[in-house]
Length: 322
Image (cartoon, rainbow, N blue to C red):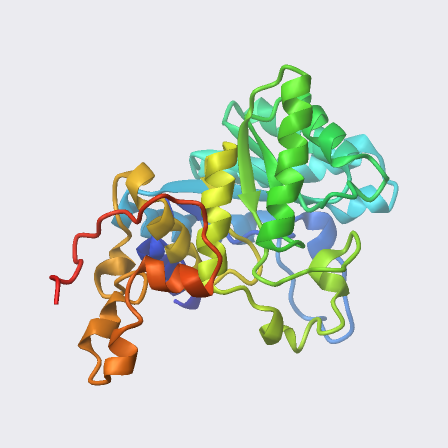
């Protein structure tokens, strides 16, 4: 019920895609035993079947798409070779095909070579393929530049190319700019994706937020605000990104900020905005004159730098002028 409720929260916040919660659901990873874990065993197919069922159930409530999530394997860094890695990828994809997902996301890959192997295997499904690496401006973990990674992903057959996790929204936008430039120079036109994490990662290395001194127990102080996400969504969209989302650290209210910022382009508002009037409009109900003044995008962008939009979109529940 907890996983299902999480899907529901993101759907209500405006998500158009219910992604299966299948991170690291690969048999080579699941078969690794750790102290205290004896007595039970899960298979990739068991977890993926359950994840697909939950995602489909919630997607039907809001006419959302379902994406199967394929992740890196432990076999690649163990040096077991292409055939072994692709066998683990194939097991993940097999279950997604049986459960009729709409497309497949290959995400959180640290090495472009492994990503190419994954794309090669996933394209055999005949489903659209999204390829997303957890890299920043310094490129992948083997030293391949971000631009070259993007080109290689597109040439391997990815329909959507981008980056997810590890880095904050601002650093992620900087990375996708470099990737887009390289793709344009190569004459390649895949769709673009950004799914940053929800923590500021200034000053970090290739490991992004994982290398923050506060990780993993004191990350709250680094959490990005919904207003930062508004700016991120606008910057990504204006750059040409059409799959705009978030990864670790993104809560439902962050996703709602994306959906509200791009409501005009999407042609709709998220259900979660029915009671969350954007840009502090609920403040008109306050008994305090001081708080009632904190209403509207103009006020909040005097506090948070402008996202670049010329005017705020209309909202179906805008308060009447006072």
